Length: 93
Image (tube, rainbow, N blue to C red):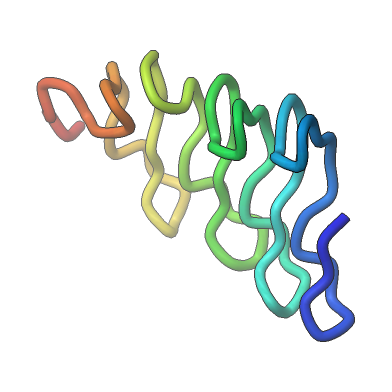
């Protein structure tokens, strides 16, 4: 668990002092911004990222894999593959 001025900003599992396996990140006011998997302190594996107010921004595989991105209104704007955390063949929907 990591606190920032008394607010929780990370809860989850650690290995050798780094985030590993499952965890959750929060912004400085306590809103959930990410939940998913970590490897060696970085988001890697399945996860979900959120805008403020729990609106889904991204769900899928971090680093390399398939995922979906949504605009602030919940509309799907991209679905496809990611490589090194970036869209591959960026074709917005």
